[in-house]
Amino acid sequence: MDDLSRRQWLGAAGRLTALAAVGGSELRDPEVAGAQPRSADALVGTLKAARVFDLSFTWNEQSPVLGLNPPYSFALNRTHKMTHEIFGQAPGSRVSWASEIMYFSGQHGAPTIDAIGHIGRDLKLYGGVDAVAATSTPGGIGAGLGIDSFPVDLMISRAVFLDVARQVAGGRPDPLPPGFEITAKHLDDTLGAQAVDVRKGDSLLIRTGWGPLFGTDNAKYLGEQSPGPGPDAAKWIIAHGVRLAGDDTATFERRPAAYGKELFSVHMMLLADSGIYIVENMNLEPLSAARAYTVALVVTPLKIQGATGSPLRVIALAP
Image (cartoon, rainbow, N blue to C red; front, side):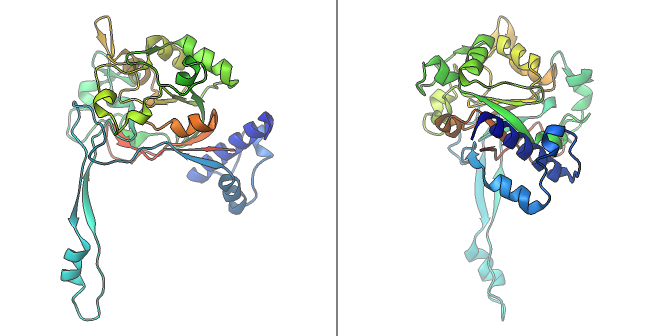
């Protein structure tokens, strides 16, 4: 598939699926209008023709979760044996079922997304909202900054995958070293090497190569040092009009996340200052192996009122 066809496919698949999700029937973009399917079957056929990449790890009790957050836990509270003994013994009844109790750590997992209201600067949230007032009740973050306000049109987006780790390693898939700060130059160099462009409204995925450590070397994955974007890269992300940024580490930004005396500058710059969503703990190895640098990204947070984040099942579609 040539580059023009690839762009047309990504544009059509992403926009058409987004329209279908919200019940839309018109295409405003002339470039995509000509590619509009005339039936749901045609849309499904277009999407079924895509390669599908699962960018999620498996949630379990071995998943690395930063100590600032409560751990994930899971247990069956009803087994098939238990329910069959109660409901399956009645005359004519043969039914049984199982159910579980799950507790997700709100901000970090496999992967998770940060709500815009998760981070504040000087007790101000995005748009100048008073952080104290917005979180004054146990009901969660108000002012439309909880994860339940995640935009429907961002559930499917054009995403650019920048394999920074491979670029820095001269083409090898080697991970970035601990504490490595990704700068604007690293993003520009990778963009040029991959011959892709970032457009306003895109999502951006950055590979550090630390994904394989998830669940296999939790001590290193959650250690005091990990690679990630610094403030210089955050300025680049903001300047390019990115709406969602994600990578394959526990905190997205470089750790230790301290720049002078300031902590978590990148989170404040993206979330509190710019309203850009952050996704952490992504599995970006499938995209790296396939060298799939422009994809249709599907991100669907759980609609939890006032939540500071949500676990995700993230997939990417590519021609």
